[in-house]
Length: 194
Image 1 (cartoon, rainbow, N blue to C red):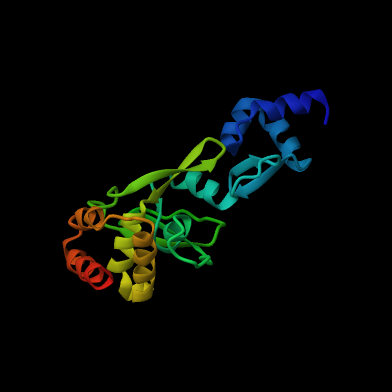
Image 2 (cartoon, rainbow, N blue to C red):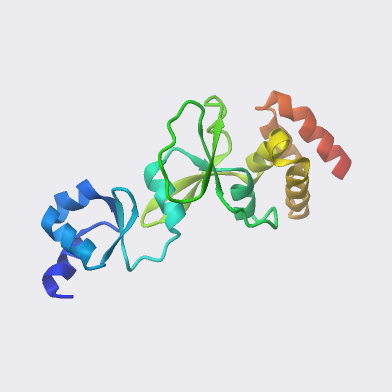
């Protein structure tokens, strides 16, 4: 790669939208870098430098849905509370929010906007971007709360692993208080396991 193209590539952020890249280095130079294979299309209008090795799926979600959060099986697997490797990413967005087209295999979950931010942390998605992820406690509560969709074993397996690691039942019950319909099921599960 010649010095001019290297300088243009260095001037771009690690991940960017087409308009951002064209504004920084010009549309002609941007097209040349794409055609030469120095930039990869992550999804429509979203590009990254080829030298990056981040998880493209999480990075794409972080770019397109910055207010969402990994949830259910994906969050539980990230926290090592289940042995599964989810075939698709469980990703929560507030109910009524538009879900963009994503190339990654995503199962969109719509959660109540009033409780959406409870137990939501940030995860480094790479390239200076962050992605929402629910805490282990919130993920366990969601697995129990949505047992009609996920099955009862998911919540039971996660809560057992969480307790083995030293999870405090009081912390789980405090968070479950924000979900009144689920609180009794969480309490009942804890009583059986303890």
